[in-house]
Length: 369
Image (cartoon, rainbow, N blue to C red):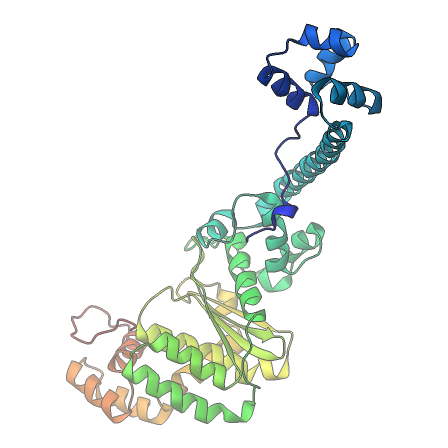
């Protein structure tokens, strides 16, 4: 951010004694000679030059007369010094206060992750307001209170996966903050089928998929934030309400078209099945291979999974396909995907997940484009 020069504060204030010292040196006048000339006691003059004593009106008149300068110049130099010194002291006080606050909050924020995302510049005076904006708090007692929120209680260490709670909440709050800055069309829950049809066409083509998905969701009144996940935080997505519109956040942790399509549809399941009836809800989805047992049994997560699967491929058609293709055949997957007008990687991903058959080679391109 560019600041007006009038808003800048020097690192230190320049005492008029320094200027007097330079002026005498340039005129080749020794300090003792100047003291004799002006009648200013040498000790007093020495303290002025060293910045230990102020220049008052009487001293300014004597200096001005001796140097053939207006005495007002020296009074102004002293006045400017006093003002600048006050600003420097205020700035130092503000920095000390900011350092104290920073020491208090640094253990509550994912410092390394936020630095990586370019959110901080290392100046606590600037960075602290950014923290308050991201976490939507006015004071840091509120920041500590966020971590006791019931929605985050299930994210704890396990033998399979360590979920860094600070990183997770930092990701969640950052997605919420970015969503609050977005403006999209008005949301209408009755446009579900049209929205899904447009998304499926984009998934099938898999060209500029993320950008086009953002555009489509925006058109239907849903915000989409793509935000990379921090370390030790295998978060895939989140669904919540943001200033009058539903919002979705995804991490693109796995850059595959099948994972992207399922995550988007899963979060849309939360939007249409759960958020429309509860504007205060927030659904956070962690890598389901490591998520807690409590989460896996959560009825709302099961409903969102069913919404995603059946939205991408109709239930009856999928069951028929699975009954007749229990032994893997790449050609049958490609053929079925063509009939269903979906990307073959989406069919393949679901087939692998439901049959638990992963150990085979395939030419199907899964990369998200």
